[in-house]
Image 1 (cartoon, rainbow, N blue to C red):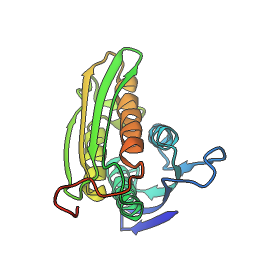
Image 2 (cartoon, helix red, strand yellow):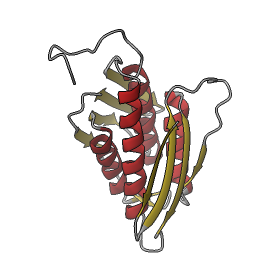
Image 3 (cartoon, helix red, strand yellow):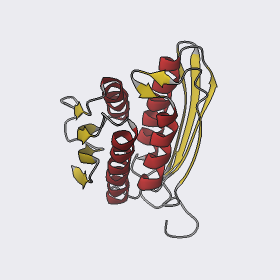
Image 4 (cartoon, rainbow, N blue to C red):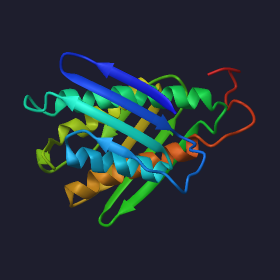
Length: 193
């Protein structure tokens, strides 16, 4: 398990990530951010990717949701980067077009070491589960930059805002699961990523 800790004047984060747990039938994720809806989304990510994930967050939630969500994304991104480098070579690319009821969301990833993010989640309300909806784009962007991956997430259509964000997390989980599959050689003509 890769462990990342981050402590600032605003947050205290501990993140443990195992992308290939020894016994995938006995996975017990422990996620406690103080934001139940954020916990739910992180649980979806871990469960659908097949990861063991432990996150403890203490943050200045009395100020707002920004610092905590951003710092979890930093820690999780760093743990993901360390994990994909440790388990390299891998398939590198992953993608998923994921339906969730009336929502349809596309996610594509490239574990290339060149961070970039294009996120298109057109929420129709400013808050969801006590979290500002603008934070979801920021979470995915921050995760991509710290995981040193290229990440594209685009919603095709939706009516329910909960389904919009949950379909994005699940699509990301499945795209990463595909990209992290082992292979015998690096997938690049450059010889190194």
